[in-house]
Image (tube, rainbow, N blue to C red; front, side):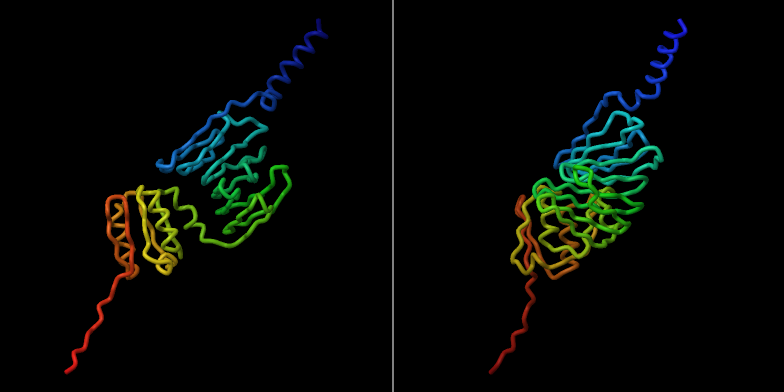
Length: 251
């Protein structure tokens, strides 16, 4: 009897301790469409994720002792709660991000098979899908990793600018008019036409709030540079402002 009781006790002990490691995970998928804004998600461990439109986040319904891993397609900002017992891992189709308590932005570009990561606070490690470390990042760094070429580029950025999209703001820092036009096309569902290549390459620094109307945004651009615009239904035309030349009259 004691022998069987010991076996039963062992099984019960294993089930209470080991179940966290062996239990099958139930996953929840959060998917946002192109026209949707930002969705804030609080995870089981207290971590917070801001998910951008046209992105997909797959998370366990509850984290186990052995698993604090999520998968991402698109773009998200993570503010991770510290946990000394387990790492937090973000898995993408091209790279894995391993973190403790930290804040960072990650943007997965499926079209060119690349991942851009900006570290705001703490430290993170980028790994390939086999778990081999690519590099460790420091706050203020941006790393662009190319999966096809297995190469990465690192530079330093203003982290306050890179992550402001989660507050429903579009922040442009030394950004070309063409890049701004692309963002306006998506935000307002219009087609922005720029008069010339020279004008398209002109750079701007501005902030666009979520609730701003398109004409107000265009007026802001006109204030920053000598340009003009016209709106024809869903077509926007931007051109250089013509300056009047003085004409001298001769006898």
